[in-house]
Amino acid sequence: MTAPQVVVHRDKELMAQAAAARLITKIVDAQAARGSASVVLTGGRNGNGLLAALGASPARDAVDWSRLDLWWGDERFLPDGHADRNVTQAREALLDAVELDPARVHAMPASDGPHGGDVDAAAEVYAAELGRAARPENHGAVPSFDVLLLGVGPDTHVASLFPELPAVRETERMVVGVRGAPKPPPVRISLTLPAIRAAREVWLLAAGEDKAKAVTIALSGAGELQAPAAGARGRRRTLWLLDRAAAAGLPRELYPPASP
Image (cartoon, rainbow, N blue to C red):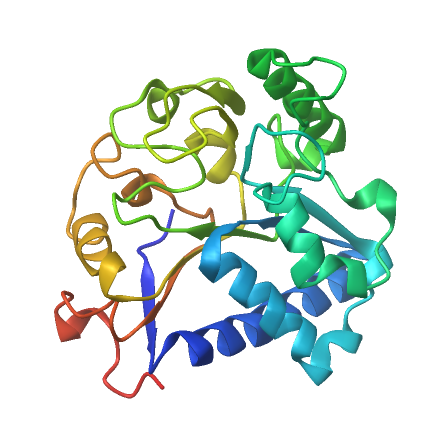
């Protein structure tokens, strides 16, 4: 695990555009090296903002969308097509506009699926799907994702791993059902920290004044039980992509003064 790198952009719009450009480059490089790429998407305003910026970028055509595997870090356990589901919002922001292979779009189960309201069974199904996609060289129960995106909540949560809740304490399972989330809806599915840490690169996104305290806490040595974002790390790289408002509480030595 490497030390986090911090990049600060002028505002959230520039942050989204720069993150989209980074992601395009990473996907293209992975496809050139291995024939395919895998990305874990995140929801929320910053995750959807990145997808919208990617869709608006002329460089998006450099990606071979048919050779891209898409996964999700978490999902609201709601009926298929519900407006609050991350996959629904991702489709509106980008996915419906590009030529993906439907078999490579790995949405988390919905509450009206075969397992109904059993969120634990749904989590096990997604864990099994991840396990089938893992290769021997991954040395684990999930693929070595090229990039795993995470939004950072004002309470330092990432995916649906909230401070002090059982899911953030999980050390063995890759996917868990979450009940009693402090942010609605209360029932969710989430990757765990062990699954997140299997990624080659983890990128954490935060923009706005309401994220400044969480960013400062997570980057100041807080423990992952109290600040789950502090436990989100990539095997090769951990990158925090911020705007100036979210970075307001950080000491300037954490990031280059010349960050755009």
